[in-house]
Image (cartoon, rainbow, N blue to C red):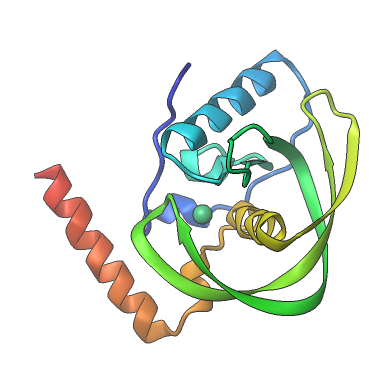
Amino acid sequence: MTRLRILHHPDPRLRTKATPVESFDVPLGVFAKNLLETMYAAPGIGLAATQVNVHKRVIVVDVSEEKNQPHTLINPTLKTYGNRIKGEEGCLSVPEIYDVVERFEHVDVTAQDIQGNTIEFTAQGMLAICIQHECDHLDGKLFVDYLSSLKRGRITKKLRALSNSRER
Ligand code: ZN
C-alpha cells in the first residue's frame, strides 16, 4: 500500500475546492484504495482527497468499531435535515485538537462508486456527522471554521508552532 501524506492546517492547499471526478479508471481505484488505507493507518474514521493534496471529489469513511464498513464516495452530494446535534470532532489535518461542532442529524447521500455507479443511502448519527465533515473538506472547509475566530486563531497558532518544531 501507499500511505499518502496528510496536509495539516493552516496549509493553504486545504482551502482548495475539489473538482468532480470524470474518469472512473484504474488510477481512480488505486487512489481510493490508498486513501482508505491512509485513513485506517492514521488512524481515522474519514479522509477526503483534499487532505492528501488531490483536489478531486473523493471521500472515504468508516465509523464502525471493527473497521470493516468502508464507504468510498465519489462526487458526493448531500441533503441534510433534522435536528442539529452537537458532537466533539477532530480531524487528521488538525492534529490533537478536538472541539464541539453542530451538524445535522440526518443526511441523504447521493454519490458514485469507483466504477461510476450511482449510490444512494441515508445516514444518521456518527456516519452522518463524518460524511458532512468530509464533504466540507472538498469545498475547502475545516471544522475549525465553525468555531469562534478567537478559538480558531489559538488553534492556528498552536499548529504552526507544532509544525515548526517538527521541521527543525
Ligand atoms: Zn477532517
